[in-house]
Image: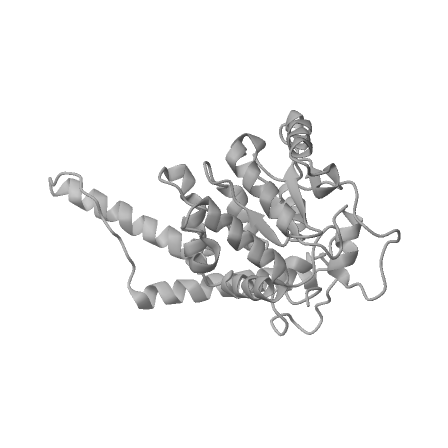
Amino acid sequence: EEGGGDEGGGGGGDSEGGEGWGLREILRRRYGLPPLGVVFCCFSQLYKVDPATFAAWLSILRRVPGSVLWLLRFPLEGEANLLAAAAAAGLPPERFRFSAVAPKAAYVARASLADLFLDTPLCNGHTTAADALWAGVPLLTCPGDAMCSRVAASLCTAVGCGPQMIADGGIGDYVERAVRLGTRRVELLALRRKLWARRLSAPLFDTRLWTRTWEHALRAVWLRHCAGEPPASMDVRLGELEAAELRRENAADALVRRARALQAGAVLPAGLQPPAGLLPPRADTRVAAGCCAAPNDGVT
C-alpha cells in the first residue's frame, strides 16, 4: 500500500525554530522540509511517474523559487534514479525530499505539512489522493481518457473543489496551475481553506451516504432481477431530505469522535483539527509530531 512520511534530510535553517515561526514552520523543519518554501508532494508509488510527468514536475520546480518536491521512497531504487534524472536536467538533489512508507495515521498527519499534491496523470493517486484531501492538502490532477487517469478528478469533484483542482486543458494547463498556486500563496491558502471546510460535508467522505446509496442500488438490481428484466445501467440517488440527514449525522459523528479523543487526552494532529469553536471547552491543541498546523496557520 502507498503512504509516505519518515524524517527526511535537509530543511533550511540551523535551529529548531526561527524567529516568528509558527507551528507549521517548526514541524516542517523537524521533518526535513523547508519551513517557508512551497512543498509540492506526491505519495504515489514511483512506478506511476513517467518521463513526461517528471519533466512537468521539473518545470514547476524551476518556476517556483525555493520549492521542493516531496516523494515516496517506494521502491528504494526509485530515489537514485529520479535524482539522477533531475541532475541531468540541471536540478540539484536539494530540491527533493524522500520519505519511507509509514503507518497510516502518521502518514496522513505528516502529509498535511505539504502545500500541494501533484497527481500522476497516467495513473492517478487513488487511496493516496483521498488521503491527501482528507489531510487538507489541495490536489492538482490532469485527467486522461482511461479510468485510472480520471480517479483523482472524480475525488476532487466529490469533495467540491473540481474547478480549482482539475487541469482539464492538458499537461501544459497542469504546469501553469501548479506554478500559479505555488507563487500565489493567498490563492493557495484560499483553496486549502475551502477544502478544509468541505471535508466533513462533501460526498467524498460521507460514509453513511455512500453506504445507503449502495444498499439502494443493490436492492434495485435485485428487484429488477426478480421481475425478469435484463441488466441495465442505473443511476441511483437518494431523496434530498434523506441525503441531507445522512450528511448531518456523518459530520456530527466526526466531530464527536475528535472531541472525545481530546477529552480522553489523545494527541490530535493539528492539521486534522476541526475549526475553532467546534471542540468542547476542555479540549486543548496539543500536536502530534509531524503534523501541520490548521489551515489558517503559517501562511501569509
